[in-house]
Image (cartoon, rainbow, N blue to C red; front, top):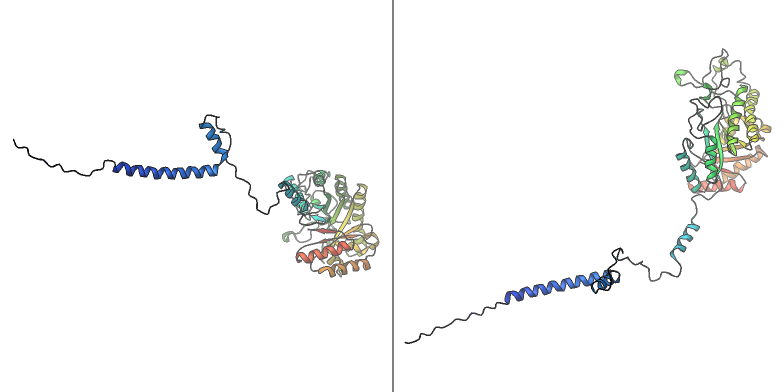
Length: 394
């Protein structure tokens, strides 16, 4: 039998080609993972790498309580690392100066003593600005008591709006290392007259006098002609001195602006007699001064430079300067502004003028900042201080 030859076709299949391609992909992935791991180990460093190595080698259990890598402190190549960082901080604090570096007094905003939180804030602000004395208004020009007064006639009345006693206010100021001074409005008082008898202006037929018609907002005033007025104002001054205030500033020590018709309604009072008016004003001022001195304090009589220069001082606090002998028994607090004092030359001129007109008179100045730029204000303050005049700021 003849055998038939069969030709076998050979195909060059490579059964490993696919697997080889996969192996190359795995190799590439392995290389990438190796690079990533190496980079992580480079960042993490010995702080994490060594515990893991020890762990897998069986040497010890990794400390999982550690927070891991802590970023190093960057230093410049030129930085001086010989001294600790805390030394540099301390030096910065020691050389830092307050905004205002004077020993003057600051007039706190109205209503500063209405509650403890507000009082603490304004005092800390004044102290941070370099002031050593603060003045706080405790009776405003409506007659409201901005502290909890214990004066019998008014302590339970609507005239009292403050929640802190005079002593609490004073103690808060002194605890901050500052000197406390108080300020009160005196005769311009439209509230106390409803609570305290025999201190207001009354008409000749015994009606309560007002500075205008009721429909026009007329208000009562405290009369210096009434003997009880001097007693009442002295009682307020004594209460503040006893609380520890070193000075009590008497503001609004003035008559109301009388109209022509008031000569008829107030015919029983010498409202046109300058000597009697002056005597009445000084009866109140002297009573307050005596009360303050008995409590270890003193009073300052507040008035403006503009009122002192006015041709007619009636109905202004400067009316009291009509008696220069009595004026020397108290210190003045003279308020100045940009209209009355211009620059350092203006301050020097004012000092010379006071020396000429009121020789030997003790006084301080209260300078309002409105109308001045910072340089002008500083020049004026410096001029007064060089002349030995105390400066109050607001």
